[in-house]
Length: 147
Ligand code: 4NP
Image (cartoon, rainbow, N blue to C red; front, side, top):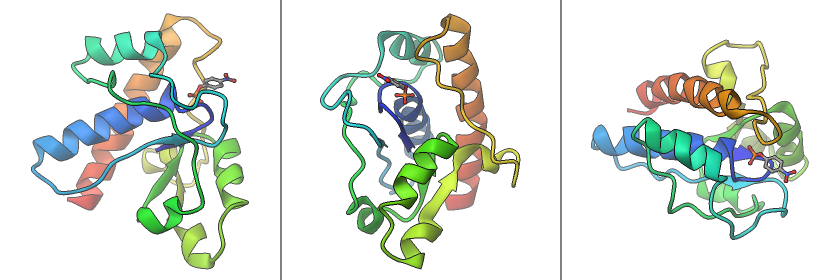
């Protein structure tokens, strides 16, 4: 799960899918990263942590890291939260196989629509709830695909 800062959207997606995978008893590695270096080592944004907690998801233990080229080797599916993150990772892809791992997460809900998970960082509290709801729906679809 990849966004820009790895402190808002991708930690929420990570926490949601991690929880669903665990509840389904699957052995699937879930992780998240940001394409920027801005927040490396930081815990998720307090507002995102509070929203997650309200819905019973824990993201408190996550720490931001930057997406690296070797993530293409470590993971089978790489979900970008928006088009910009997608393009940032596409520039790091070495092969067609790397490129084929890249997905826009909201295309799971609206195939081919190339919609973005809006960055809630500079907005109000409702933005965080909206992000939670979008990612809850998308991660449920992903779970059904990988189970
Ligand atoms: P995220 O949100 O990409 O969902 O983690 C952001 C957090 C911080 C910044 C941008 C987006 N920032 O520019 O600091």
